Image 1 (cartoon, each protein chain N blue to C red):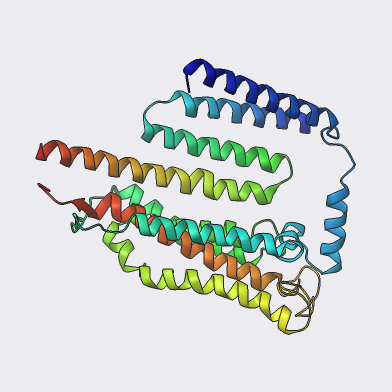
Image 2: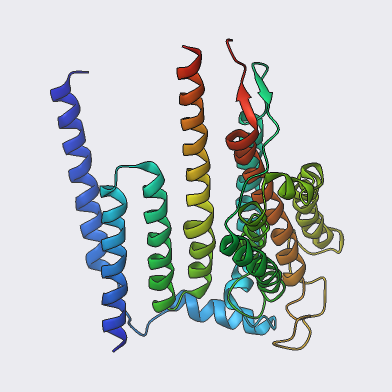
Length: 86
Length: 246
């Protein structure tokens, strides 16, 4: 039973990680990355490492996607003002 | 270096790493086995010091020196981000306009904000008892604060987040960790040795000797560092603009 849960968690991680690489738009990629963060947190919890799971949940599914989204927004804004002045 | 040579170099390096990894993997104990030599010793040491969460005992007692290094890395990384993301001479600050927020988003953010903040503080405070600790709780509390940006707008967030105060508390928390370590030296034992305080009753908030104090220092450091880091990114994304026509 426990093995089945581990296999499902591993498949979830593999699926969402592949999706994160396959998606090309950076803003969407950040969202998929946050799903990957949740999947990894589930995997760590299933493997009896709730401490690491909690870190992964806080950093991987909230902080990193937020930083990526903010960076993407800044880059897009720079591009827009650059176009106007040109 | 020609393309061909580079590919050869990559192939040789990759083959070497693969061979080493396979050789090491064949020697590993099988998955889920009963033999945990390091775990058994760590659990015994943490129980001897009345720390219910063995991970906290490893992080803040048995390997407190490692945690000092990790804390230093985070501090230096955030310092570097603040220097890189500062307002440059050819940029100016544009006052962000108040944004229209959808009513369900506002309601959700304002309900979840206090819950998430309290959860973060709870995780920091119970680091020595249950999974979690300074790092996890600090990140949760700091990101919870930013729900205000979702629920209201950037100016509301800036009002509850005096950045100078968070920069100072970041540095002070790192100093507090160092000073707590040095008190061990002054008391006649070793740097960061857990001999200063009584170990207390097992599985209560005031147990584990110096562990809860180091845990709290890390919690304040991480929460302030994340707030300062996100403030740098948010300033760049929302407020700071390049000078027109420069």
